[in-house]
Length: 620
Image (cartoon, rainbow, N blue to C red; front, side, top):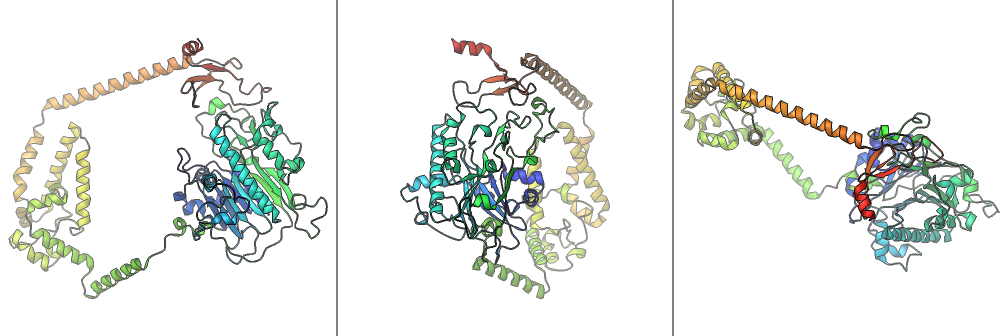
């Protein structure tokens, strides 16, 4: 079987890049796929990002309300299986857990409620519950039990060297995580840990490692876990590739480190425990030596492909968005892994997540739906459809009120007096209650059907919304005169197609107004047209002046940009975003991608503050 780990730097962008979640998973060609930094909140767990045919998925999301932490981190484990039920596949876990402290509510599944989970997690009894909850609230770990081994999918915290709070959090995270590993190994369990540790263990794993690089407390902690230092874990990639240099899995996006492979190896697979053979106690027999076939970095997932972007300069591509994560996946192939007893998918599977499978219907909602169905059937049997009854009642109500009330429903004369809407009443309603009730208003004449949808209330509401929208948008003087003439022509065309007896009765009250409006439209002064032309000419002149001014400013800025001393090329400007005395200040650096100092094509290291005078004053 094959296990892969991949920091996707946002699951949605990777799905969009590959076309679908299924295509993304298939591209990794693995039985168990572990994603980090999914950047999904619990409310965003929808079928398109968590469900794919042939895969079972397990997610954890950040629950922290701390500023800047919402919709952050998150890990997910996808297991490729033929069946989620009664399966003996190793890829389908026997159990799954969100987090590793047991402090989260429902950490064992969507249908469970473990409020006293701490008793289940041995080795963590003396640690404060609030501290455990804080560790797991950032959504950084999913544990899946596959029978022969327990798999930890982790996303280790990042901590800047001067951020004391995050350094403390990172120390607590790994200290408690190690206690959980030790507790499982005391029970004889085999452990595989995969993910983004945010730790480069040795100098060989970092592009610009200095003499004191390995003295860092987190790097020292990682190496203490390994067999070479007396620990129980094996760094699978380094054990399989002990001498390989420039084997990196992460590159800086801000400096274009991928161009010259200037990165670090912080995505790892480590394993501990005995082998699955009967003579497992023999010397040299362990899970790594007996069952790990291969481990490597999938460099084809890098954004900058070798050989294609060798001449690519970072300054030329700053406005080009490169598709892909800033990490590369790492995979491990296992051999001689037997099947396990039949079992079903754990309750933590997203197939049981309410947002994915939908909410269960209540008894009340089912009865309400049944009652409405019975009412519709009753109307059908009586020979009168529900829509016809609504239309008849609506016609009765409208016939009893004066014509001025039509304005309240949003009806305008220009909108409903059209040739298509003025038809004989007998063609639509016949001699029913509507025609009888309308005799009070129409004086016994046949009623005009206003609108092809028989005066449905929804149509009136739509007209009302349209009317409000038109009122809120500003009209020019020219469009005002055009709209008036258009409305006049509509009414004339409607009156031409209308039968004489109906037209004389319906439009008689509005004839005078329309004539007055028509006369007004025909007496537009010539001065208005000249004023409009002058206004348009003035606007065009202003646009040209603004464009020339902007081009002048751009040219000035272009001439004021310094050139780097290493290549004699224009620099790029950046702004200090780190809190401190220089926060917000602009500076210039070499525009080329970061790379080894020995490479003349790489960044030359040029630096200059944009405001040299301010710098001089600060120096004083």
